[in-house]
Length: 251
Image 1 (cartoon, one colour):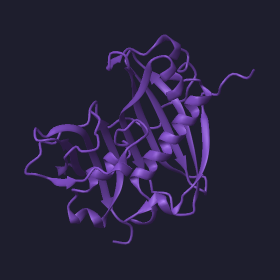
Image 2: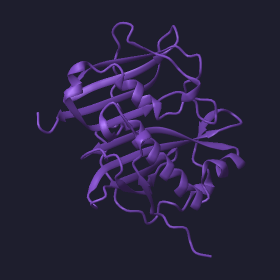
Image 3: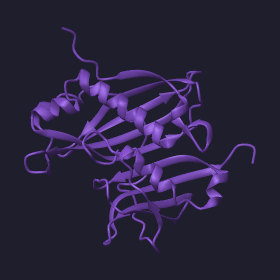
C-alpha cells in the first residue's frame, strides 16, 4: 500500500455560483468553500477526516483562516488548489494552501489553524496521538500571519442586522463558517466598493445557530478595516476579521 501524500492538489472550475456582487470573479466565501473542500478531501486520504475523527469521539474546529490575494479567480477559470499540513503544537495544527490560476501563476496564499473538540466534554482538547506523524516533511508556509491574533473591534451602535437563514446551516446544524466573512463585509462603508481586497484574516470564536440575532460591525484600521460579528442581546462576539484593501486597477 502506498503511503499517503502530505501534499494534495485539487482542480476546480469557477462556476457562476462562486461569483457575486463583484462581477465575474469568485467571491471570498467561495474561496473559503474551495479551500475547506480541498482540506477535507486531503484529510480523507490521510485518514484524519471529519468522519474519521467522529468515530474517535472528536471533531475538527476551524479557528483561523488568513488569505493573501494577488487576484480573485475569474468565472470559468480552471484553478489548482494545493494544500498541506504545515506545523502543529499541543492544541492546534496548521494547514496551508496555494491557489494557482489557469495560467499557472500563484494567485492566492492561505494559512488555516484547526483545533480539536472532544465531543464527550464539548471542550477543546490536546491533539490526539493518532494525529502524530503528519508534519514531519511538509513544505514551508504559504504565508506569514500578519499578527499573533486578529485585533478586536469594539463596536459602536447597533451595526448591520443579519438574518440567519436555514440555507446558511451546515450538516451539523450550525451556520457554515464560509458565511462569516460574507456577513463581516455587509457592514463595509460604500467607499470600499471602489477598492480591491488584498488580504483577509479571520478568527472563528464561537458557533452561530438559526434564530440568533446577528449584527455586523466595521471600523477603520490601517490599510483597511476591522470587522466583528455579534449575536444576542448581550452582543457576544463570535467572529472577528481584519481586511486590507488597495485601489482597483483602472481607477
